[in-house]
Length: 182
Image (cartoon, rainbow, N blue to C red; front, side):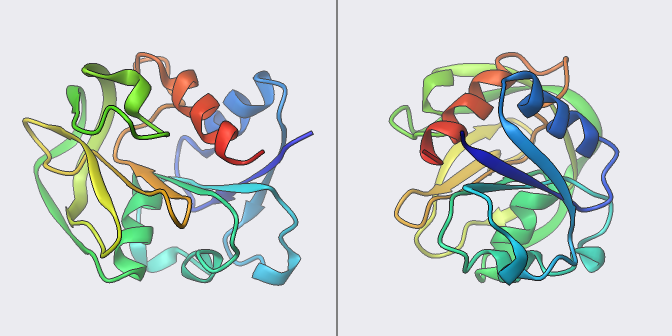
C-alpha cells in the first residue's frame, strides 16, 4: 500500500488533506515540518499550506528525498522559493472561488482537469516565477502560476486547495499525485 506523509506547515486545512487521502484508502500520516529528512519513509509527500514561509521547518530539505512531492498553496511556494523561483504578494489577496485554465493538458498532476476547473484558492502570496526545470501548468485571471510541475524530479504544486469541498475535482488531483507515487 502506498504511504503518503502530509507535512504540517501549520495550515488551517492540513487535517483536510490528511482526511482526503485517508478517505481514498491511502496509508497516510501527518508529520511535523521539523521531522528530519532521514526519518521519512513515505512513498510521497504533501507539503501542506500554512500562514508563514518563515515557519517551514525542514521542508526545503525534503526536496532532495527522491520521492514525489506535492505542494499545496504555501507548499508550492516553498518548492519555488527553495529552487530559486520567485514568490511574492498576490494582487488578489484572500480566499475566493477561481476559474483555473489548465495550460498543459498532458501534465500528470492537473492535465486531466483540462480545459478548466473551479477551485478554492488563496492568493495572499503566490509563485511569480517558476524555478528552472518547472513548467507552469495552470493559470487564472488573478494568478499567472496556479500550478507548476517538474515531471523529471516528480515535484508538483498548486496554488489552490484540492482538499476542500469548494474545489471541483479535488480528489482527482490527489489521485493523479498518488499515481506518481506507486
